[in-house]
Length: 470
Ligand code: NAP
Image (tube, rainbow, N blue to C red; front, side, top):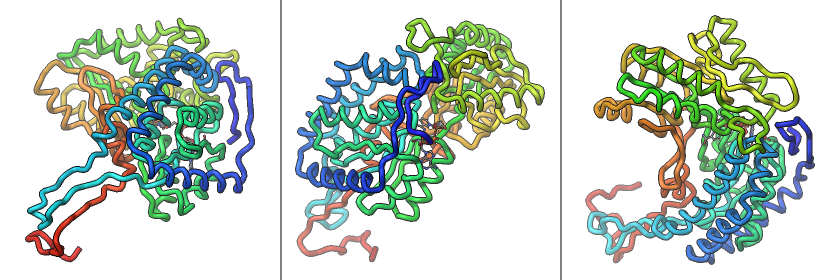
């Protein structure tokens, strides 16, 4: 893929970059390995100072960074600004909480015949981060902030369409005070990932992206025996039950489907509505979707900007055409507009069946699938009837149903009477083909730590009642 900034609102190529040579990649790995050794000699407080400085820079330069992101991938300027603010908050969160997350955890010394036993969290080394374009700053920061705080270093292979944001990130961490090489951006094609991850100095990888890319990285990491965290696609259900506040559900559904121009892994994509409230919800949802303002993402009044790529726009249009050809009903939108830029109108498609692509595939744009069900059991069966398991939403005011949804929905996160989102305080990740491992919270920080057991005794190792040979 060409490494270039192309404005999705116009289709104009603004800047192109050549891919780094093998020699440049090797140099970068060497520098990140040296930086890792340097970080081993730093304290949590020192690293926290650098991360706080990163937050300060993000806040001070928010508007410029936001314009760059909007230019590179088309999200609305308001969304870009919110993303920068969220990244700064995540940096502050980890700077504040890392000492607690990395503190030794005492174990029951007597049970293991020790005088002292505990768990110590230590860094594991350089981590390769392969990242997508949809939240070009946030996807990277939610890996980098905890990983750097834990004392690891980061090598970023960002999506080929956001090279300037990728370079900005390296510059940001350097200016905040992190040692040279602690966070390095590699301008490379995805073909170079095998070579990078095979290098003995690179200890682990994290990928946020498609299932195909996830399988590819997992294969390389399996061969090389390296730890991976995979954050992959999703086809999140949004279930509306009879006791729900239907008008509010329709309002939130509109945001949940269309924020980030519909290109979010945790966007609600399948709207599963109980027959008792189906007509009311369908009318309110289609009305709100149709009312969204599509246009120039730099305009503060715009709700939905262009898709990030022409390929992405063609893909969702093909999914809609396939559904229509097989008998689906379009309640609003549904047509690729002419003119420059890769725009697509907010669309609601009803009367879907399993023969249609939209039934099983992720739809990565502002297109919602609407499904009618007649019971709780049918709603859960349909919600879980996907290979994905990232987030899930359920709308119900019935406390018993809330409990059941929390348990029954197969997902890494269940949000009741709200839309799925991410917070530094809560773990984030998926099950099934949405990947494995967690980001954010203490769990996210521990993914790239050596969870080291420390046993201190008086020469009696292995004497405890639970001890055995391994
Ligand atoms: P993608 O094609 O998988 O790209 C993501 C990253 O992986 C890019 O840096 C890409 O590089 C690289 N890549 C692609 N193929 C690769 C391969 N075979 N080996 C190694 N690296 C490879 O994903 P996308 O289509 O741009 O992004 C949308 C997908 O990401 C959706 O499925 C979405 O749900 C998912 N996503 C998941 C999360 C989550 O947290 N679970 C968050 C955001 C997005 P190039 O750009 O150079 O191809």
